Length: 390
Image 1 (cartoon, one colour):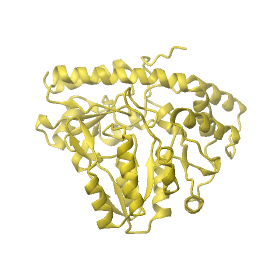
Image 2 (image 1 turned 30 degrees about the horizontal axis):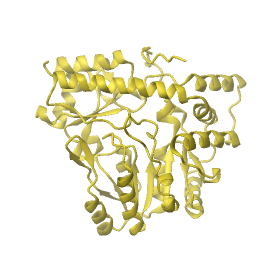
Image 3 (image 1 turned 135 degrees about the vertical axis):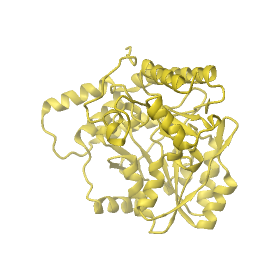
């Protein structure tokens, strides 16, 4: 089956924050948004068909996943990543971020230290601070064209601050790293040495470019799996973020009980009925659509890289290994973070993520969402060229 990812769909007037939130956030009404990480593509046909059938039923009462839901999860994660699990391990939440906040409250106390690796997805920092925990940062190092982990600093931060919880972003948002086996093993070794729990956010696990392999952490290192919390969602892979459903795998019974108790204290129980339908349908029938999408996204990234090299040789795309989020180094332009943001939003009329949103070391970078039709991406690049004087 062929899928048309070139089709332009007007999302305005659908209450989406990507387009309809521009003016409310002080942006020009005609700005082109390539910031928030959702895609400008319809969900796979298998998902749309399943949801249409469910909508026709007409009743959307309280719902719980049946065995076929867990069978769909098993088929996907076993087939693609070699990860097998007991359905009892799976706890449903509305999102990976809500699972992260629940884990922070369940496994740490106020003023306990929680470690992240910046520049990183900004809700990590926000979730730690909002829950009155101490933020500890192991800064990723940009070495040549790739970010690397300073393992000596990682261990030093854990030891000095008595870190209780480490939040791993894998694949990494925004720098696009797909962590290698030896990197993941060393992170786990250090965490096990100091009895640090690991929350592994693997929401982008399905977005990996050729030559790279994503490793589900508890599948890679099963001997340490009981000190891990793995959280995933079909929301990024199949563009279902607004349906609010994530799957969090917690093998250890005591950790799972503590997590569920914290969920109960938050008043959260059943999952979205349409979210369950969409997730099951996506994992059962979305593989071919995803494979076609990955090829399209790879071509989008290649077009962006070609354009930057041809027009802005000193502005570079950090070669992406995973995700559909381009991390672009604009420091050579000599602009402050505020000046760069003004030039992009007010002159180019392009809405991108400021790099310093992901931590201080992201200043001078921008994150660009390439999960859009090619014409949309080309419009963005043309506007950049005009604004930056090419």
